[in-house]
Image 1 (tube, one colour):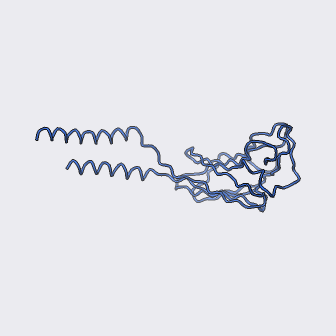
Image 2: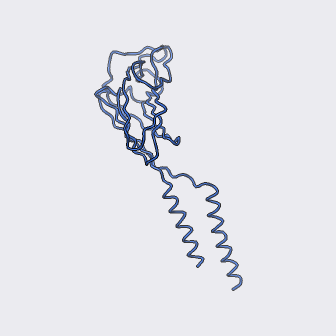
Length: 200
């Protein structure tokens, strides 16, 4: 009888852990027809999980690395290039409410390339068809409960469409109260078995 109770408690805890898993997932398409300056995000997470933020970054400024120029995009321009009043490394969109299975699009970005990071000199005339300028580039998503996930761009030419799959399955750690209740229940069962064994 007690063995059956122990098995039932263990099965219940395993079942509860399986149900606690949450899927955070999205597909980000960066459109090479617009030289990676436009794209879309499709939220493929579990129902009830929204994408609330998108960060599209060229990474640390170095010679030869990509950099954004002030243009028509909405959102916030972050990580300004030292020595330049018009260029920045990171484009941030906050306050989104992209529901599960919905698509959000963006555009109006202007991608250039750093010539000398120390002086802020930028090449705004020539496209990068080799992809070295994207060596630090990434897209990060923020979800409605604060969870974040990121994917790096491949070092491909700006004219190549890139499809990034961002996602993870997260199993939250059981709350302390639940763990204590489970251990307490198992402890009482085992204690009962020891007492019964002594009486016999």
